[in-house]
Image (tube, rainbow, N blue to C red; front, side):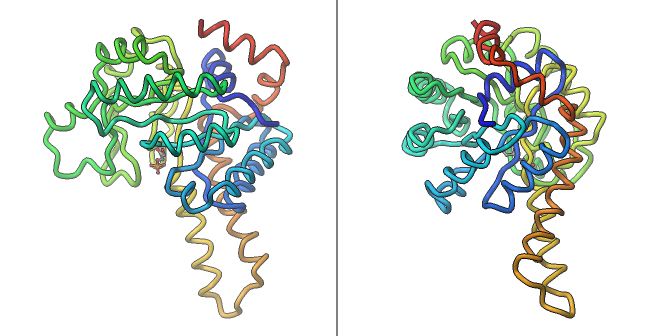
Length: 298
Ligand code: 13P
């Protein structure tokens, strides 16, 4: 069933687990996420990156929304990392449940102004907003410790930012990176604990591909209730296609896509297990869950 992102996050946070938000590009990705969520009675989020939105347009959004409506478990549809007011307006008008207003590339005051404006707009549509301060990078390579720290979320600034913008969820930067971790990930859990102490809204961790189970569970204990996953699922898709196309006999197209779905679904299922959301679908299905989430936030 198509569900509210805010309700998914608030219920997960109250019950100390996290929602997996998986980037999808097409029908295969959508089937993999919903297939894994249904097989494991878990809530999940389908998220569309702005470049996928540009490529897939409104048919991709309609596909996600319709698949979420038809699902037997709670699923919400989210626009990931949007730096553009136009893309956010398109997503809201299409009925997506939440958006990430990403002004993290901007100077702080401009990030605040952009996020505040996008939050006011999104709330008129009943959609939730995730924002980011600090700046998650593609890689940590070549940065000094001071440079890395400068990119991380400042807990005190985060308090002011959340109060001024009235966002619903905050993506934190604590050493997490998008894509592959080239060396052992190092997350600043002291910083996360400080942020958690000062801020009551749901916290989000991007770059969950490649994070070990111990870091995932520690993050959840410290208030993270949404993890973003893209790279590992995408790699499973590409690996499956490559293997099959390199096989002696060229596969049938439906067999090719079916195997790709199964490969991605296995990765999604493993993540749902790590996030602790397996078997939690029923917690989100009360007609009062959404109302309760709103009351808890206000
Ligand atoms: P990974 O590609 O590292 O899993 O990160 C995904 C992400 O954070 C999308 O916003």
